[in-house]
Image (cartoon, rainbow, N blue to C red; front, side, top):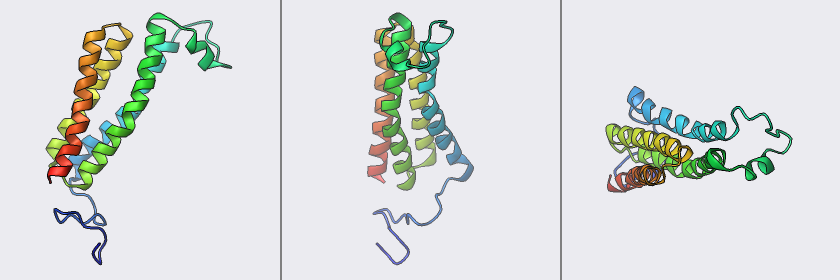
Length: 149
């Protein structure tokens, strides 16, 4: 710690405003989108079903099969993936990883997660797993890049 706050090994002062301005907004927008993506699975699981029980939705969902059950599973997995991604963007930003790198990896994650959800609901297991892996590797890359700075 210096007098001005925490300083990273690359000299970045954590108490100063983040560098990146408008460019960094893309990465932060990706965090927002990723936070909302689980609701794509929710909509797939619940949309248009007349016997949906809003008084006991979790029990109703646990009894579903087919695309509704897969939509619910995609929702749960998306909620599980989100914190790791959000932390990766925040840590890479704080470590002052090149803005273009952070943005590229953030966009890659979001696109991969959209593909993951679509493939999960459509029961395309191999493609779902590929999209899942691409998303995971993009988050790991955010942390690796932060460690390299």
